[in-house]
Length: 250
Image 1 (spheres, rainbow, N blue to C red):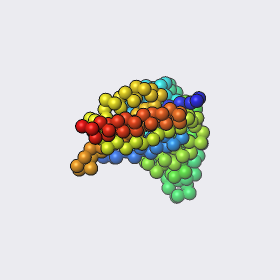
Image 2: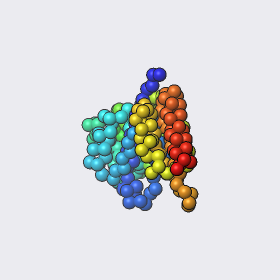
Image 3: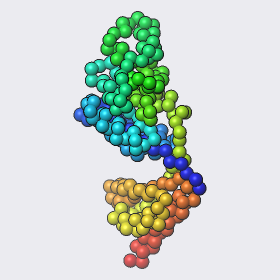
Image 4: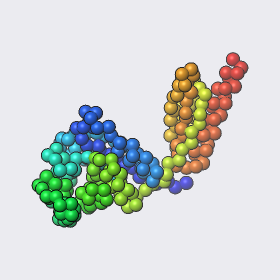
């Protein structure tokens, strides 16, 4: 079976994320949406509002993955430096983009509000960047190369991502099956390792549970090929049956 793998990384930007003042909601949403459309989210980095740190993170991941998504740092305040950092990472000038200026200027005029220098900062982006529409609050995100820069406010981030998804190249969806084991990880660890070795085209994860009295494990088998998935799932079930029978004889 032919499978196509498309990969992505995320860089979440903001001092407030690292201090704990803001609890990130965008990473989980992006992971859910990437899984849904068949893109593998392979790496997530959280970096401070520090231009050098943002540049380093962006340049590290943009050459490694098909897509990079960022959140945060494109607002009107002095510490919103993501546009400057992305421009520096790509070696281009950060400019007041004319279409973004027009969109924001018209929005503030409709609202009877002054289009201040601070608000104009939201129209800054790398020279040659493409807009990411913002149906929530008008100020656009932007994309340059394979890097997609979005707001940190979850409602806006989600709306921008919705606008992006139809234009992204996607891969073969990752399929999964969950097998519930009545045994803890200590009991299944060794035989499950053998099952994984016998099915290298799959990914098998174990997730322990405790109900207050007994340990059990959810075993999740993932693969892109349905036949490979079914074969590994069958071997996991056979492993559990073998342990059950061995316990019964003991």
